[in-house]
Image (cartoon, rainbow, N blue to C red; front, side, top):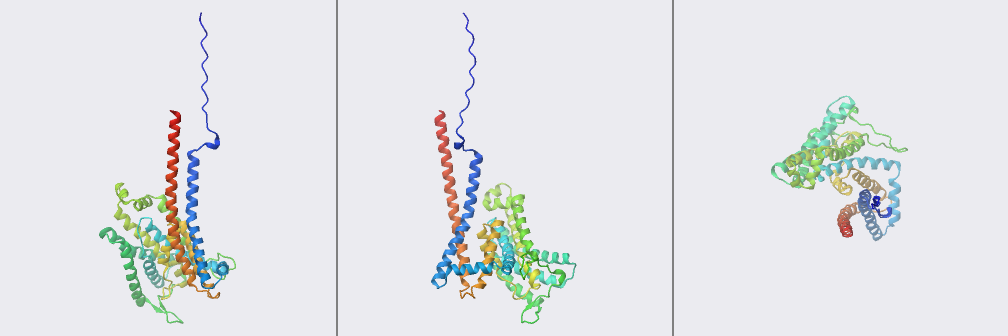
Amino acid sequence: MTTAPEAPKAPEAPQTPPPAHRDTFGNRLIGRIKLNGMLALAAPVLAIVFAGLVTSVVLILTDHPPIDTLLAMVEYGSTPRSIVLIINLASAYYLSAMAVALGFRMNLFNIGVDGQYRLAALCAAAVGGAVALPKPLHIGLIIVVAVAVGAAWAGIAGVLKAKRGVSEVISTIMLNTIATGLGAWLLAQWAVPVAGSNNIGTSPIPESGRAPGISLIPQAPNEVFGLFILAVLVGIGFHVLLNRTRFGFNLRSTGLSEPAAVASGVNVKKMIVVAMLISGGMAGLVGMPQLLGSSYSYSLDFPPGFGFTGIAIALIGRNNPIGVAFGALLWSFLDVSQNILSLEKVSPEIVTIMQGVIVLAVVIAYELVHRYRIVAEQRRVSRELSASVRMEGAAA
């Protein structure tokens, strides 16, 4: 007696965990990105809050109301005239900080930006005042001279580092001093008296070499420097160079691990020289908005100190073009707003204290965030390994 064969059993549907317990790679990646973004934002915010608290304590100790003083600074800094001054000053700060940031991304400390931009501005002003060309060509020539001089001066430190192993910190500091003396000598050779004062400066740049201002802020009696666009272009170029080119990849890899870069075929010595040349060329642009937008001549009262301020702003912005932009605007706001402190009978040095505390607090905050990120990553890996072990045990 034969029996009919049994019908094949339908395969059991796999049991899937409820949607609430799913832990997909995409969700973990999104969560990690959000965490890193919040941590990156938390560091400068905490630093600024801490600087405000320290400044408030100093104001209280000197018998000044902290809230009223800070509100007076904000009110003065938000007027149309002050906003234009902030943008103009921030343009120079941003260019200086980006020149420093490029070196930082490769573990090069270019302290010589101050000497590079002043020597570049002097030579560019002398050339600009000695020639007469159509407007675009005249402005272009002045900018090219400034970039070339800044790059050449920084290139000296790059060559010394690559060929002789001389620390760029020492060489750029020494080159700052040499640039100051050389600039004073050249100014004495090229200078003409400035009418109505005891000041001396290079021959004035004619109208064809001047960049017209832009009425960017409504109701402002002054204009934004026309060459503030240089800061925007440098920021975009910095991002493209570092993140969209092979040179930028080699630069970043060299900064992260020089032995690994050498093993992958990167010529580190060449990278050092090229990076210093680019950094110096960017430094040469620092004085251009002021020179072609207001001064039209390099004289004894040409604004100094942009290079050293750029180091602090690069640290605040973590060498990121957007972060540096916020840092430059903040620093410029504090510099411009301190003008109101004298009227409030408050010492303007309060702003210097606040700026110093911000830099110190930012460095500490970023270090704490960096350590927290490492601990969080270790805990995440530990949780994933534990979950994997449990799944393997359940399957067995």
